[in-house]
Image 1 (cartoon, helix red, strand yellow):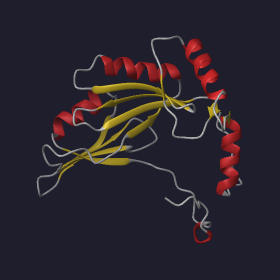
Image 2 (cartoon, one colour):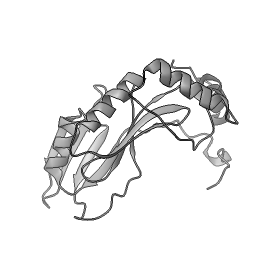
Image 3 (cartoon, helix red, strand yellow):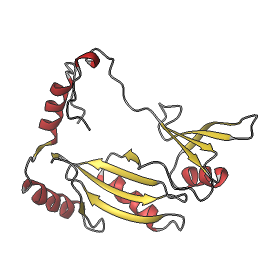
Length: 196
């Protein structure tokens, strides 16, 4: 992959953010049930096409018609073709809540709790082996990839102190605020406002 991130031809493009993701599923109705009943998404629209394929537009954001779309048509016994679905939550307690949900849901497998230095995360596999991440930001930045196992049964005070001690010892450590300001400058964004 190229490390040149500012191609002169591209510098005048409007800023775009990721709005939603779509995944193909094998068993449509059970997967809709999983994402609504376990992970709290709501179906905003659904349709069956003339060819018999189905789709469900789903959201967990009242300002967005859909943030996830499930499509029927994945071939049975085929591997997942996504790396992961990463969902941002507001707090470490929110990450812990999804970890508790995952531990108590028999359709979920592969639970892993991780500090990336710049985020605390819980990962798991959905019923069709798609990896899901729920994460929240830490106040720090360290170069990625970085992954350290964490114990979400510890208190927030313990996890914050533990993570800070680990990341301060790593090369490239800085505050997330400094990283964001630097990142905005590198992107040529002049109307950047910190959101925390």
